[in-house]
Amino acid sequence: MTGSRMIVLRHGRSGAYPEALVARQEQVVRARARCFRLAAVCLGLLCVLLLITNIVFYVKYINLEEEKNSMSKNTFSLRENFKVERKTFLSYITNLTEERDGLNNSYQNLTEEVDQLKSIYKNMVKERDELKSSFQNLKCMSFGSSNYYLFNNKKSWSEARQECRNKGADLLIISSKEEQEFFKKQDVHAWLGLTDAEEEGEWKWVNGSLMTTTFWKGGEPNNANQGEDCAVFTPSTDPLNTWNDMPCTESEKWICELTAVP
Ligand code: MMA
Ligand code: CA
Image 1: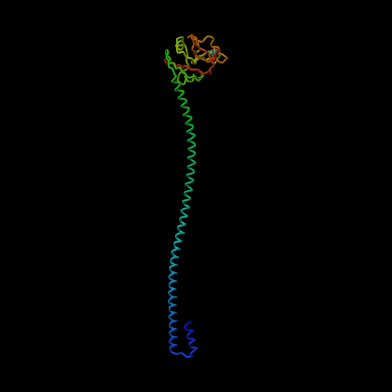
Image 2: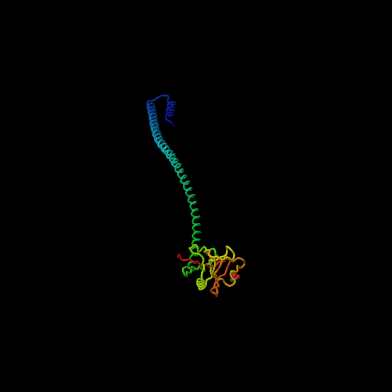
């Protein structure tokens, strides 16, 4: 039961205000006042606490706001940097792509060049081998004022003549019995520089002179099958009858003659 109710009950029962009761009532009033003061102090303290809390939170909020602003600034600058870097990288990629395409082209050109060089090299090796073989088999002879070169590979009459001319010589011209006998001793089967290609039956040496001394085999020249316009020196038992006419397209060995300049 509260103090005020007790006072009312006592007052109702006795109907008078004794001094003790008054003192008691004053005591109660003072206690109430103390209570109110305490409550006010507590309230004040609470207000102060609230104020401090507010201030703390406000400061925190300001800091966070600043942090947020600085982060947004950073984010913006990062984004800008990223944009610039992206642009730079894109331009690098474009440049690199162009460079790669250029290199691809160069590579293709180089591959073609390499193929060409390979084929040139192959041809040169072939030519070298041909030259090697023809020079390995080349037999050099001397008679009178002429040097002779017997080639042991075979070519048509025109090609054989061209080979001689390339070396400043021409196909062999036999202009004496001694020269004929000399070649008989060599036991050769080779083109002579003698042809009737211009006019059938009119045999001419490659230097343009008409044939005077002749050493045909028996029955030759017979222009067999109407197609024999070039003369060949053949091995024969008879030293003074060794020539035969043959088709110019046949492949035979040949003798080049290089006459010494007087
Ligand atoms: C025969 C003879 C020659 C002719 C050749 C062609 C072997 O000789 O008929 O006159 O030139 O054949 O191969
Ligand atoms: Ca013949």
